[in-house]
Amino acid sequence: MDKAKKLTICLTGATGFIGSNLLTHFEKNNDFNIVALSRKLPPRLSGAKKGNVEWRRCNAFSHLDVEKATEGCDILIYLIHSMLPSTSFTQGHFKDFDLYLADNFMRAAKKHKIKKIIYLTGIIPHNEELSDHLSSRLEVEKALGEMNNLIALRASIVIGKNGSSFKIIERLIKRLPILVCPAWTRTKTQPIHLNDVIASIDYVIKDNIAPGAYDIGGPDILTYKEMMMLCAKVLDKKRYFFNVPLLTPTLSKLWVSNITMVSKDLIYPLVESLKHSMVVHPKKELTIPGHEYKHYIPALKESFTGEEDGWFREVIDYTSQISMKWLKNVTYIQRIHIPLHHSGKFLAEEYFKWLPRFMRPFINVKVFDDKVQFCLFGNLRILKLKLAKNRSTEDRWVYYITGGLLAKKRTLSGRLEFRNVPARNCHLIILIDYRPSMPWFIYKFTQAKIHHFAMMRFQKYLEKKYRS
Image 1 (cartoon, helix red, strand yellow):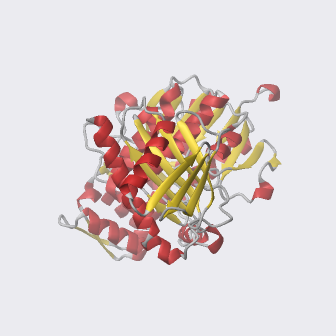
Image 2 (image 1 turned 120 degrees about the vertical axis):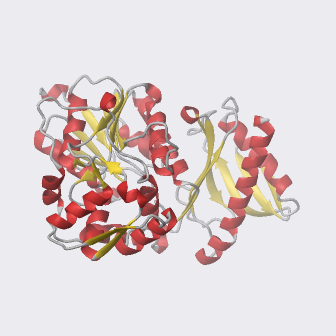
Image 3 (image 1 turned 90 degrees about the vertical axis):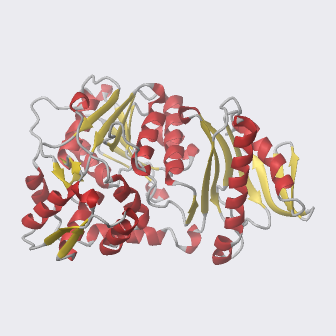
């Protein structure tokens, strides 16, 4: 490929399981220029280049970061989820976090006129009530598809070294001589090897594939129990499997989380989705001409690391890193369903009028042009906001947190945002990177609880007033 005509690919999640292996593939083939994104990249390394790869530091929760990171790119590969926490304290449903992240990239893609978006997601079963995990994946797919240039590759379990779902199975087999098998372990799935996923992504980049959703899978259809039994056989571990029909989903999640020592934030949504059959739909299947897909047992043999704790230590280390003292920050997202003709600016104005009525006589809100003050007992300023005029639009109204008794002086990029999300016909209210001034253990059980209660009441107030 002529160097002057190389396309530039923006690779999100470049240090993750799929992303890091995809990056290695791109480095070897050198067909494209790659912009690799990571939120964990030290600031001094942002912009570093080696071969056809440029690294950019990007916090996907920052719309400004996302705009800068995707500048100059032709194709976006979206490999982001929010099931592991991004800050020390998060409030809100992970579906709302996923939607917010997808909307950040969708807005950036519109601004930079990105030609193609590729999203790796889960297989979506037909005519079933979806788990929150799969429902969120489908919602992200719809949000990213707003420009009608999205190719969604839907896969079941990806088999490969350090893959989260596969490593959970491996850890269960290595740790337990006897495995109780709830009903969900008899659900059918169609695992696919990591190299086949990479080949599929490469194929839809290079070939003129029409936008849409495509299922990808390996040649074997197995139940989760069969996958575990074959895993035990390959590892040469004698294991006993017993069907237990009465084990509830809640107990299943606790069992898997405790045995594997993996964060419940990651385990719970995954286990919840295992009730669905994850088999490729023939009419939606994407097959690569001439490509030989790997069977499950050979894929297993290539995927064991020999160091079973490596991946889990990374997850545990990362979880502990975000709890360090200097990262004591808060993210809160609230979804509200009112007609979209009400702008983000309108939502902000409604909130500033409603809050003092709801919190009377304790809280008063004073609005001065581009500044807002939250006051306790009249004049004690507990939070100060300033409108980000250069970052605000009618559908995305943003205030920076500039001070007040309840905010640390070094608030970094703390902000309160009111946003329309047309793809999902809803609004989001986002408090992000807020650093409370009160001691952390007190904040979590006082101010955080009060804030959540107030936002839930505001949601009910708006939805009753404008949807009736």
